[in-house]
Length: 452
Ligand code: ADP
Image (tube, rainbow, N blue to C red):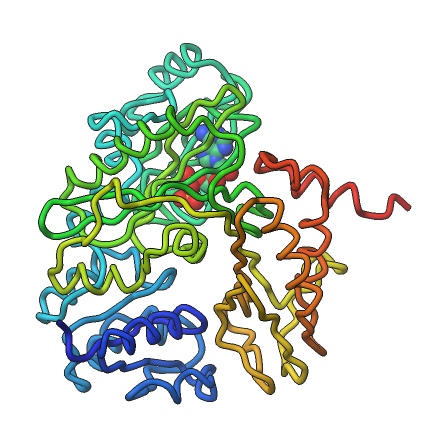
């Protein structure tokens, strides 16, 4: 087992990883930027090392500074968390070159699943359902038009190296497709250093369902079932839940089995998530694979009882996954609400600053993943999420009631947060019915706006 692990991240996920390490008897080294120098969780680490100023490119995204900190602190391994360097094959490779274990997949496995065209090919080979579209990157415009007319409009142009919802173009007809192809490729080249683009069928109405998986270094892979993350605003997830309401579980089991086979085929070690869109007919289409632990991992932990962060560390240390697929059982229902320092009453404008009132909820079935304490100052430099409120109950209905109760207890000030939005959502009859689509929240928010 590792003696000492460096956490190359900040905020709630840095604290989450620290907690997992401490329960495993591993010393922790936490890096931080000057913008985070007073962050309370740093005191819980065995050692905290400043790696640079606030801008991420000078600190949390700076590979050489993080590796230097790892060497100074003599750590055995680095956990990247989510975001920042977590999906960068060059970081995984830099760790390997420096004989530091990267807690996550090898650069090869990350590359194979991170590149969208390559991933789609691997998915197909393993029976994972993908959108109909161009099998490879598009070389020639006429070929693209031919494929589009075969699959039918609308189609979406995507960058093979894309991410973060950038560089995608929806085309309703041949003229737009022709004019957009070159633009999309140029934009992809500028944004990702790779101009390869492809097209696929665009689904007008869909739900977002993703499969959590674990793979180890001994060729094992299991799935921990799904999360439904359809409540989104600007492609950002707002509430995630597990299990997904109203899905055909027997049909879905086959998708899960194929997804596990896919990560096995690239010798994947660590936590991975395969994202899908689910259409009105109950068919799944793969979007992409995230080669890291996800923000919403706690909902899966609550319904399966499996600690995903601890598993990622144990797997990196060479242990076998101690569960067989049949050991993974769904128990109850869980929901995560992302609490952000934003004002929902004013188009979600950021609300950074000092938190003088912080009264988090508690009681049965309530889990708070947060780095915030009273007096914490939300720095303006990073993601606005200040807490994840996760609730667990026997049924979905009880889970919603528990969420409403916990949100009522949650008192934060003077900064504004998204708590009032969540209170409305857990009481919303459409959401309570289950199965809303990914555009639902934006439609609903628009309808709330005064018409004058
Ligand atoms: P990124 O890596 O940039 O996040 P994804 O492939 O995950 O790209 O897609 C991001 C979002 O774009 C999805 O969550 C979905 O809302 C929308 N999207 C992507 N592909 C399609 C598609 N074929 N049909 C409909 N919506 C899509």
